Amino acid sequence: MTRPFPLETLKTLSRTRSDQASRKLGQVNRRHHEEQKKLDMLIRFRADYEGRYQAVMRAGGAFETLMNFQHFLERLDEAVRQQRAVVAQVGGEVSQGQVMVQEAHRQVRSMEVLSERHCAREQERTNRSEQKALDEQVGQRIAHLLSEAK
Image (cartoon, rainbow, N blue to C red):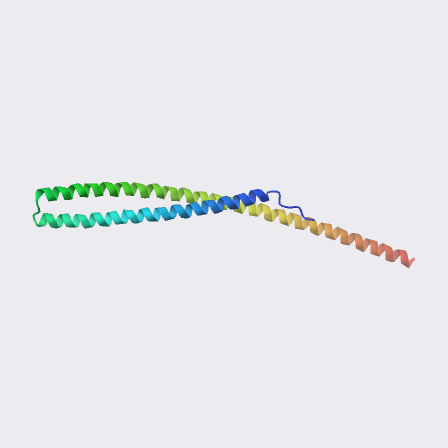
């Protein structure tokens, strides 16, 4: 009878951790994508608003209107800076998540290799045991045939 893999619990735990790390990376990737979309939208909005500002300036808009445009453009610039910071921060989380997933996969593979080696040793042990039993049967059969031949 083969013995069970003594590290089976750790093997299962490493798979669970790998699955959790992969799920978390997926969530962080989605968040990064969403934050990048927000940044792209802010940049497009700012460019559109800059175009409006330029048009009002060319048309000789009132000083107060131009100041309002400038203040709003400054607020948009700050929003873009903040959103870039958020995208960079989430990008760092993505990088960390990728490292964690790679490490978790490495641990799973290590456990699988150990398990495969264990199974190979157990199979070899079983084969030797079966061969020994077969050799004993053949030896007894030969002894029985020799004793009958006398």
